[in-house]
Length: 377
Image 1 (cartoon, rainbow, N blue to C red):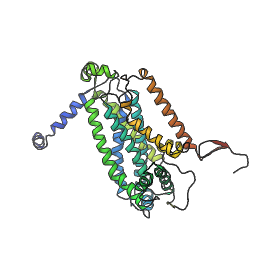
Image 2: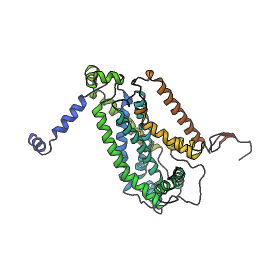
Image 3: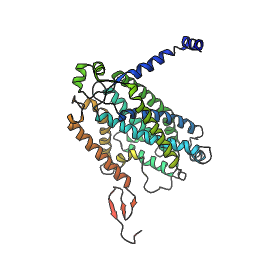
Image 4: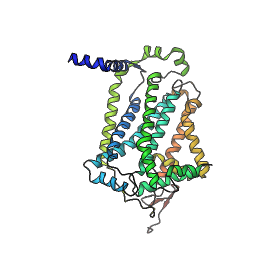
């Protein structure tokens, strides 16, 4: 056994990786690290399972308007465990967005985006945006009524962009309407472009986290003056003490995906028919706030405001110059964030109820409830 190990070591230098792992586990982290700091790892594991389950689905998927729906139907109803893999993939996508949103919220709460971790935040923000685009491009692939018309509704605002709106809309759709080119583009982006982009960003993000460490509770001024390594020597705890939290969170998240996939499997609606528009079609839940917001303001102004909000979110570290990290010492930014979060949730909730009926109430397209008169159908 010893000779075999020596033979492998001579040809691969595997001990270098063993030493790296041991050093990583011994690396100190701030003492305030808790379960909320495991969300990044959970998102990474979900991404890896999305790649694995996506490959299995791609083996049996046909990328054309004529065959896409039939191939998804075959995966769902005919192939052994096909329904489970598809449901696991779908629920994993939803949970990945939720986990990333919570991860970004945690980073904001602890002021982890401040110097010297500004670029880490930028990469994390881009990862969140690419993950949402993952969901957007994958939404069309089943080619049932809901996915077809949902994509049509979601891509329509692109044609209203200033100056280059028509060009952008046609580039995304591959024409004036959702067609074979749209499906091919979305499939290529979903299966090839986005995994490569997310993989590169994840590698860069992890490198920066390893280089700059997890942020302390001290202000930027204090951390800079004392030095991060000195602070870790004084108050840090070995990362291996945090490992059980990482493992526990990953186990819980993966178990939740499996439970949801089994108890609430993904269905498949009727094949898309461009001539018949279903009622109340909406984009995925994480695009609902934007979709609903555009109903209340002129489209041009709405699109500009939405894009401005995205830019401000990505560039937050360069806009918030307060050196303090503790929430109680940056009340202005916390109030702004709370107002933005509540407004987003409220608009998303209006979008959820819009064009639906709940008991004696019917909600119009703006989400305003109207009581249904007795005897009225």
